[in-house]
Image 1 (spheres, rainbow over the protein chains, first blue to last red):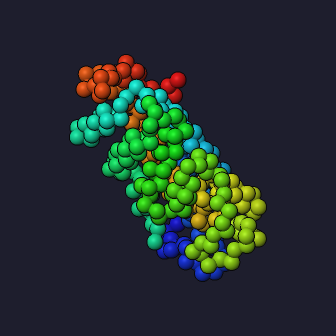
Image 2: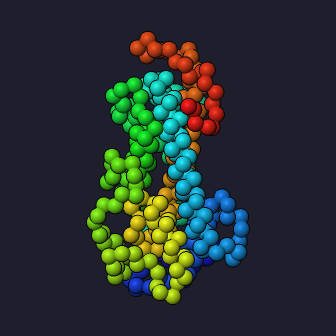
Image 3: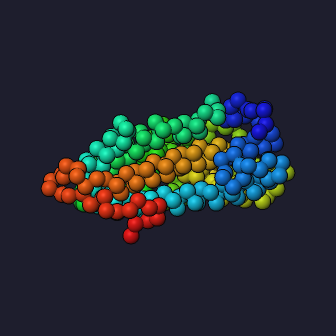
Length: 93
Length: 178
């Protein structure tokens, strides 16, 4: 990852965005992606990182949907108060 | 302003547990009939996630503004000015002309996936996506833990209102329970 970091990206007064800035952001994103984080940033193109990011977010959305489905079913058979009690108990353990 | 620790805050156990209990709290406020459906759970989970973000990010602000809409792709029809001093056209003004169009295309797609970022600039979208991904991962960890917890709620718990818990007989698996 680049050692040069913009301190505050939002106050870039010029209308041009520097290559360094872009590369910095893209490599930061690359580190989050399970598919690509182990590869060196020289070998992965920005376009690839962006594509994998989109795929990854879609996957995460799908997982949340599945979990919502699962939770909605589980909540049918569990009173919320006892679910809350279970959470508290797990926090204390 | 934003540095690397912004996204690591999503990784702490504390954040996850806080989110779990807030989520459950929110769900208990929502339901009037026996139980909320999947869509409601999703909405509540996303709203709670946005609240947990403490209003620092566009994606969380966008979720809170779209309170009852599940479809995050709905536009707010307001050409918002952002803090950047770029001269923005009404449409997307992502990159200087010399950049490859393919890159721009991909950023457009990304902007549609992250709530509230459809018309943002390239650096903003990337930054929002970074935080959004970390937040989503936490949401998934928390909801998974919650689901596992509910799956194994012991039967000998004090029944509320005479209801016996059936949770213990359900296997805790990662697939959707139909």
